[in-house]
Picture 1 (cartoon, rainbow, N blue to C red):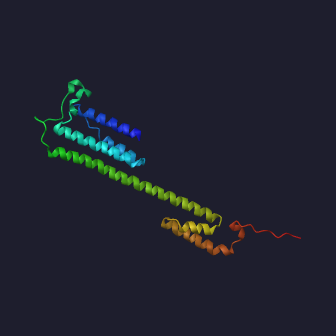
Picture 2: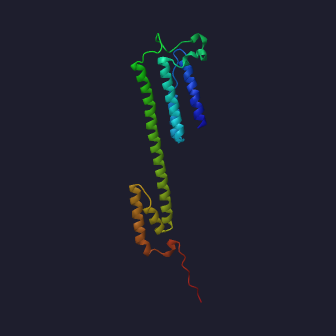
Picture 3: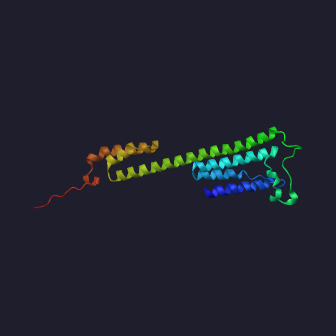
Length: 202
């Protein structure tokens, strides 16, 4: 968690450096990777929410700064070369007129980020749910097989009825249990692990 937080803060500073650098490339899309890591690694929800809040707030802040420069963020051009000072605000007087392009750009960036979060979260959730389901199936099948190997049909039947197995496996085990219950009266007691005392000779 701490590594993701530190990396996210570092990415914001690097993105800011690119902002105050002429023709710099924005780096905020790297947040998508951080959120995906948090989802795939099943980190607490608060970590994911914190990362999303950080990036959306940062994008909103830079958008507002582009329009009106109320915070003077872009005046800190000392982070880049002194000869490369410039402003992203390109209107004659502040605040600049809010354009459709600026608003649409912010909405588009936010939508892309949130949609990626939604679909990645759904994929990760479904994947782990399927993995846990398969683990339950494997455990149930292993236990039932162990009971069948020792002809403990009562325990096997109980476990079978309390499990949610895939249809093909359910049908196969059902047939095996039915056949063993049918054959049980004709099998020797030694098959069931029961000790039959031998008669002592006089």
